[in-house]
Length: 251
Image (cartoon, rainbow, N blue to C red; front, side, top):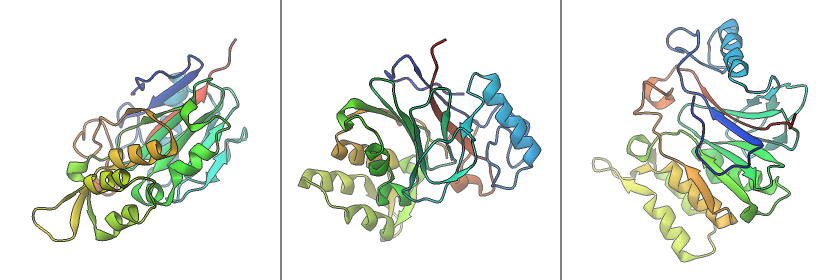
């Protein structure tokens, strides 16, 4: 498991799983945490038990992710909700998103009173999932910190003109922001109108525009680090990692 290195308040705990340490068989080997990718339910349940053994609260808010912009509040019943981000102010209630190339983003306010997890694939990122997540906080954006979890790196994230246009068509306050978006796409040397997109940089640009400047992480590649991470682009049928964040109760 990966424990983010960021200056989160002491009461805020975060963990990101790798593909290692579970019971699932190929092609989901071994710590797949998704019930919706074709893996056996009992294997996933056993894998989720690994989280609790590692200290994650028993109640986790799992989402049915749809590459949209909806943000929900975590429910103590832990029934699955349809959204791409989840937030809570309740202690010992974990917010979680599942990924296998898309970008997971974890948030906390500096006071440690509210946390959130967002699933930011390119569609959700372009449509405003990070903006909606930040808006769900009662704290000002400059009182938030964000952690960018493992995602596909620019070298392997080949996209078409439609993806580049989706980001360039957003409104930016300064010309430099639009230029930064352009620089987050590099031309393919072999095909016209094909690019390599930097998800990490695109997320940083969106967060900075909102006023969130304390941004950490962004130094893994799910595609190239096959021993650690699932990658849908690399493997097709595969498992999912979880990125979780919660407020730990004071005993």
